[in-house]
Image (cartoon, rainbow, N blue to C red; front, top):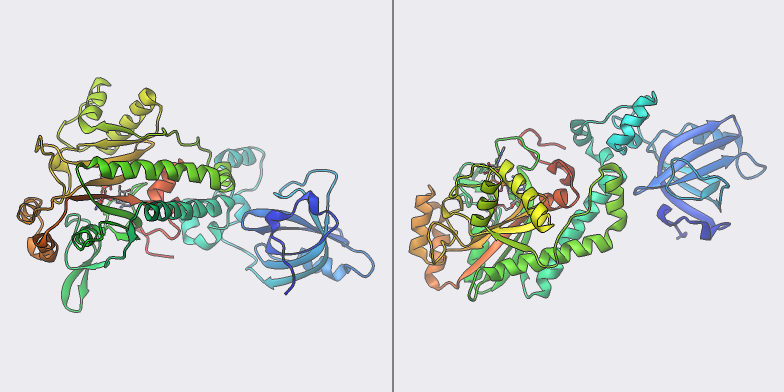
Length: 466
Ligand code: ATP
Ligand code: AMO
């Protein structure tokens, strides 16, 4: 086959070389009958291709053909790299391609519902353009999501989903290096694992069933089966009934479960080292992607410490109370209090990533282990980025009769989870774990304002397509 060059690799060093590239016609402009400019884009990188009528090489017909290309059509271009005297507007690469051959591989419709250039602009750029009297359509979120295939062509979106891939990759690599084994648990379940309200019910060949709200029960059962340390990356289903910026009906769960030798801090230690490694790796390996995201959605890099700050729930409540906020010391923090505490922690400790542990037992799921020294509290924790929750975790109850009592107390019908409770009757080690929302990690690391931006094809209470 012929040698293809990626548009992102077209630099001054290869001046004079003949290259072959494939990309989308982002903009097309004819100047008279003898010249045409086609800006070609490949995964966020753009280069200007120039067609000039010259004997034997480019005909007038070809210039006409190029000028008539519809935006977003896919083209193959062969040409010579040249370096223009003045910088090129509207292209990421500093060189031009002097076109010899141009083929249209696939035509796009002439009128697209989203103009990629408009969809790629930041709020500031949009405001400027509007003030300058430019004709511009602000692309709203519903339009973006309705035509997601077009929307995800923007450089920021290309960046977001590469960052997401790296988050998942670091999660796996780190845990594998710590002796964890990856597992897959069923998504069709006989009962709810996280409380009955937010569960999708379905008919399983005549039996009532539901979609898994988490791998909670089976990841614990795998510990009873002697895997000692497990992780899972998989879909999680929640029938959320409210429409918020951070809840989806289907998201990707990064789950961990492990034996505990002495203390639930062993689980927190894993969270700590995993996420410091994660943030370091993202900052090192995703520079281009993060820049592309920042250009459209400006954000400050995440502030985090070498060793993650740990506060008890009581300490958090005290900080909020001292700031004049009324808090029930045995209740849960609402979204507003979580945000406020995030700000107080940032001001006092200089970090936007921290762990809050020893939550009141009453606000945690039935499988959570109470504190040995005070049963009003539990061996549990939440983890926050920029004042919003990304992780919940805890040590679990491993005594079956007490587990059944806790489940009933939390309104769960033990019959629907009897195989889970019974798993602890064959000998079960002390254990704990945590669940991370992948889309939330990406959203908050990148300071984005809506979880739909970090879900490729989001499912929310109002959206089941595309
Ligand atoms: P988790 O399910 O792990 O707790 P979460 O982020 O979904 O994760 P919730 O328990 O649902 O958190 O809620 C945490 C807090 O956020 C609650 O105390 C509640 O005040 C607030 N909250 C939850 N859902 C909403 C919502 N739809 N609108 C406003 N606030 C909400
Ligand atoms: P929890 O219900 O807190 O805990 O979920 C764990 C993490 O998943 C994310 N998350 C969500 N992300 C998007 N949309 C949603 N509707 C949504 N709900 C939750 C959050 C949250 O921190 N079994 C426990 C975990 C454990 O203890 O191991 C659980 O499911 O980032």
